[in-house]
Structure formats: C-alpha cells, structure tokens
Image 1 (cartoon, helix red, strand yellow):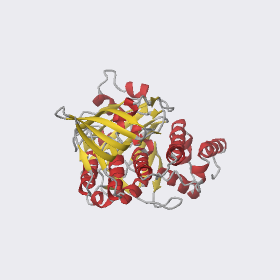
Image 2 (cartoon, helix red, strand yellow):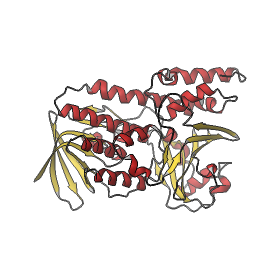
Image 3 (spheres, one colour):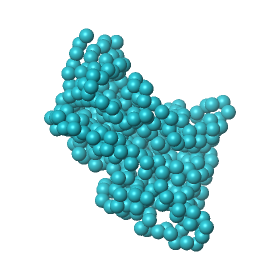
Image 4 (tube, helix red, strand yellow):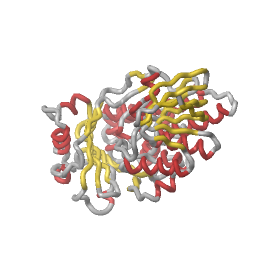
Length: 415
C-alpha cells in the first residue's frame, strides 16, 4: 500500500480545516488535508459572526475572501410581531471586528480551499478517511479516493474538521447526545426578485413566529436569499402532514406577517432540505494525537450563527497546539484546548437556552433599551465569548435569567 508521511493530517477542507492547514503551512509544518466531497459543494451555515474574521486574517485567507464581494453583515435584526431589535456590531463592548459576511457556502468554502491551495496546502478532494489507528501520538490513517484506491497517511497529529461528517467521533466511538432540546430546520434559497433596495434588502433577519420557532432570512450579494424555519422537531414535522419539505417551508413562511407577501410565492431554487435534531456533542474534544474542531465536536443551534466561529476558533487553536507538541513541547490539551473551547461553548449554550425559554427575547424586545447592556450582549453575539471582562460573558449563567425575571416583574423598569 502507498504510504505518505506528514506532520499533521487535517480531515475536511471547510472553514476550520482551511484555517488550521493554512496557518500550519505558513508556519513551516508539513500538512495534508483530505476532503470527502468535490468542491464546490452545498453546505448550510451561511451567516458568520465577526470573531471568524480574526481567524481568516491570521491564516492569510482574508484577502481572497474579501475579493469575492460577499454581502457584508454589519449586525442582525430580530423581529417579533411589530417589535424590532437591531444589533450593530460596531456598537459592542470591547475590541474586535465590527462586520463579517453572509455567504452562499458553496462559493465561500470553494474560495477558502483555493486560497489555502495557493499557499501550498495539499488538499486531496473526493478522498475519505475510512480507518485510523494510533500508536502513542503517531497515527496511521487509511484513506480511499473516488476510484477506490487506498493508501496510508502517517501523521504525528490529526485535526478532525470534518463537520457533520464527524469522522473521528464515528470511528472512535466518541458520539454523545446533545444537552439541548431536539430542534430541526428546513431551508432553501430563492431568487430574490422582490428584494427591497437599501439596507432592508441586505439585512439578515430572525423573525420570531413563536417563542421556540423562528424564520431566518439571509440575503446574499448574488441576488439570492436563504430562507429557513427552525423550531422543535415535533413542530417542524407538523408543518406538512405528507412530510413534503416544500409544503412545510411555505406553511412556515405563511406564518410570518413580515415576510409572507414577499416570499410565500417565491420560486425555490432547490427542493428545501431538512436537518433533523441537528445539535450534537462528543465524549471528549481531544486524545493522544488528535483534536476535534467545529461540528465534528459540538454543534449548538443556528440562532446566533455561532457554528463557523467555533469551527475556526478550534481549528486555529488546534493547529497552534499541534505545532508546539510536534516540536517537542509538552502541551496541556485539557486546559489549553478543552477548557478554553468549552468555556465559549458554555457561554453560547446559555444564550441559546435562554433564547428558547424566552428570557433572552424579553431582553431583546424590552423598551426602553439599555445601551450599555445591549453593547455587552452584542459582543457575545459577535462571538467574543472568551472576553471575561464582559459581565455578560463572565456571569452568563445567571445574568440573562435574572434580568428577564426583573423585567417580567416590573414592566416599566429601565434595565
């Protein structure tokens, strides 16, 4: 069997894999990426948050992305009936990027991969990792290409950035249920012939139909718009008696007072797709010779678009720690990787849970607004969930719940 020897094997050429491999390549580490799909390929997760921009810039991938002219995301709008809450990323607590993008992921990921390749990263598409064995911190991975040819890749470290493929969790029996309640989503793209000029036509919006049910609308710079419905799995399943995704999504759009007239009769560019019980978790984030990043480890919920931010955060951090370990340094993966990543996951988990209890919605739509509180929450929504100078990060477990309770008890309080 053909054998290949590298320092680091990265599984998956999505944002996490490209960030980690590009950073490793430019820092003198021999890296190889295997990707099961052929690019460009469709994937969901089209709304980014500002924290990802730090990673694209550090990995040297930002210029190629910026040249594509993707729709700039300056903030986000939340609707509930006639109530409106706007967040502007330039008006947030602490430092950090004040904008990002909303993107058709097929084009976005293809651009990322090509940028990584242009920097010398070896990406082998249509190649699947089918088996892996560890000998201490060294590993031997068996991969198979589209022609059925197999070979061994020997690596000193493996970074699993395989997303929903969750390669190592499956092969190493690391899967475990999410602590979040089961939710599902149905989504498609439309040719946005009814797009309103100006900011209204480009603004990402989350339209709350019920406390636990919301519609997303994500305009792209190519004239298309992504539309999706998210809610408890039993609600999503009940949108169509026949199980037809097109009927289900149209029924969902029909419940939106704001978007009904604009999108109810729009032509869907592809048969709506369904993600069922999408939240997932793992028993551990790392082991001897490997680390899990992004959706290969934890996926929470799309409501605050945190998925790619955790993917690139984990990819960048795993790359830096792997380099140190390969060079002979003793790395504390428990503290420097697991505890760090899970702190951010824990913060966002609180916000997701409090969104679905309705407590966070109480804060969002309360009038009058408190500008200082809003800035601190905006920093969390921007992905800066490791900044413990922000009390809404440091005290996240109680802050939202306590203020929501106060507002419910005294409707006139200026929180």
